Length: 174
Image (cartoon, one colour):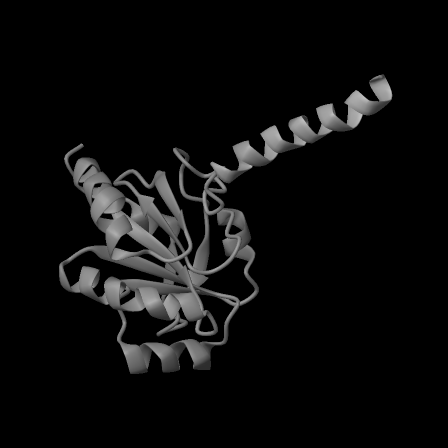
């Protein structure tokens, strides 16, 4: 009797796990950086290697930190929104991730540059410190330099309106 019930029991256990898995958000992979200070870094800027961008630049204002690359197709889709946000006065810092200077500069010359400053992370070392799993990823950083939110994948207008903009407004009022 047990011989016939065991496969049925295993089937139901597996079905429960699959049902639970369907309710999970595959883009929500979490972050070990949330509610912690931005990782310490200092990198040369893409436009001028004699200038640097560091974690200290985040302090004093709420900002976005956008990880992107010229080879990233999804980054191209979110670029128009970043340009709009920059025109509206939001502070956006960039991290050019595992790219070449020439390719990254070419993309920004063609499409516009929404970044207040853009760090160049050729080997991806700083990206690893931030827990970057791919591009694009965007972090919301408060006035004290604390990471408050992480977006994995494309920053969309809907996500901006529903989550990011209200969060930034709340952080600016603190």
